[in-house]
Image 1: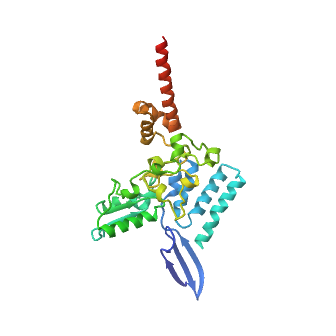
Image 2: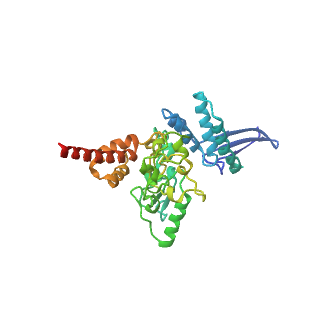
Length: 104
Length: 223
């Protein structure tokens, strides 16, 4: 059994993240990432208008907001088996691309 | 801690009013800071996101004048939250003329018409977004063709949703518009009509009524 390092909370992120790392002989043997705070957004989303879901979901994080929004929009698209117009796809890609630059 | 502080600034709707996690059914019992420490030393700067200039302006006000800015009953500085989005909205003229976008991407939407029918909550939301906007480039939701979600108001996740459905009742401003245009007579009926169609229809109704009354009075003369 090696040494265990715990970093909690991880800073520079929105919400809370904890990392546990098990080190043995200078090598990482195992690692765990866990979110330690639960706000219940999934519970809050129940019975609401699916068009609103993205706005709730994206509030997970104030830094990587857009990816959560797009993930939520895709989930609704998928659930309703919607076909996405090409222009909509362009708009989504344009929205996502600055996100990439912002978060690196 | 609050007793040692001169005052506390709650920044953002979560800090001010509990925010998204306080939305129904509020699984974690989230509340705003005022519920925890009391509201005596509190300044709320809500918004989701809040406007950084409102924080900056509040701090500058405190440093410059050495006193609290005037605040509303929700502890929001009135210089920033004293007027509605609607009051200074760049699309207001379209609202007054009854020109509405009926669907995203339709002709009215492309022309920049009022977003009231797409669910805009600017008429019941107190904030200065329509004046100072965001990110130093004049960007803000309504400018991009998206309705206001009312994010500076307490409980907006419950009171302003569904976001894409227009307000369930005619807000007071439509009545006051009706007053300006044609007097109080139709205000009661106007509010009901406003719920369905907005101020443009009220105008037409008022104009129509005038014409009708003229017609009927002239008819009486004839008879």
